[in-house]
Image 1 (cartoon, helix red, strand yellow):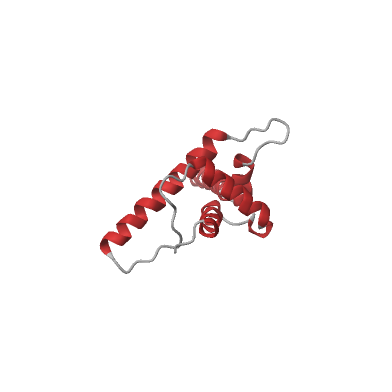
Image 2 (cartoon, rainbow, N blue to C red):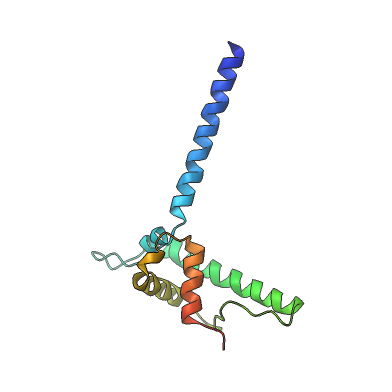
Length: 125
């Protein structure tokens, strides 16, 4: 009986642990980021804190990675080239426009959708 109870607890723990993973996967889509970044038609506001934080982190992370790659491999060619001075607000607007123009991408992971939006807006020359 002790083994059955232990197995039941272990199974319950695994099921509960899997639920947040599924929720996190769902919350990482372009659609969910659009909900955070797009202005609410009634208030004209978006979830400024999350969206701007996400865009700032994306821009800084991508810029740092690109700089590091260029340092170690002069032949490295980035996917896109974010100009110096691009703000989180500008990235937010680029992303919202891209998703509205490409509704087929709403299921994509948000990181991919943001990269595609910035790639279209800031191609390397």
